[in-house]
Structure formats: structure tokens, C-alpha cells
Length: 166
Image (cartoon, rainbow, N blue to C red; front, top):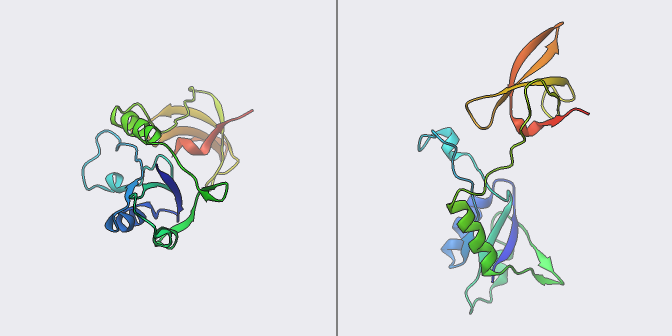
């Protein structure tokens, strides 16, 4: 059986190394790197966690030292159900591994159509009305048109900060 721990922000890799060194089986699913990513590049080192902040772990049968996990560096809490550590079946984790191996599980990506009104939800242009222009070559950027100083300006943004105006 697998259990789940909530880790500190961006603390999943450190927690996985620590627990792995103590004989605990860990799994923190990651999306595959975007196409055309060079090994060792900045984009290659970016955290692409499927469940940001969560680490799945399976302890050996004879394991009794829950304090090792509870007080591990980067642990916020162990997810619980009815006062004990919540359990997940092996079939669920195997399903995640299979889907990621097939590349059938991808980050959610909203698709907008050209000319569609959108609203920027965060960043310096927050709550500014814009018009979706086009998707760019990189999967993490899209181009929008923002009306500033009386003329439309093209701005490249992360599509996750956009929502359809309405």
C-alpha cells in the first residue's frame, strides 16, 4: 500500500532522496520534458510534477519508525483518513506509471482560438482584457494582444494565467 505526504514547496526532490536513503520506496510523478529540450538545460531542470507538493511513498512491511517520515526535511504532513495514514492501492500508482510511460498523461492546456477575448489572472498585467492571438512554438507560451497606450501590443505569456473573458 502507498501513502501520501504533503511536501514543502519545491521540496519533493529533497524529500524523495531522504526517504529513499532510508529504505522507503518513493514516487513523485513527473511530466516528461517538452520536446526539443536539451539535457542539462534550464528547461530540463524545471519541476514538472503531476501532483505538485505531493509525494507517494511505500514503506517496508517491518517498518515502524513513522517519525522518520513525519519529521523528514520538507514534510508538511502525512495525508490521513480516519486518524491514520491514508492508503492508495498499488493499482493506482501502476496506472500513473503506465500513463506517464505512454505519454498519455499531459499537463492541462487550455486552448483558445485566435481573436477570443481573454483575461490575464496574474502578473503585472493582471485583470487586463486581452485578445488571444496565437500559440507559440514552446508549449509554455502563447501570444496575446493587449491594448495599451491606444494601440495593440503583442505580449508572450504563460497560458495557465489566462481565462476566457465572459
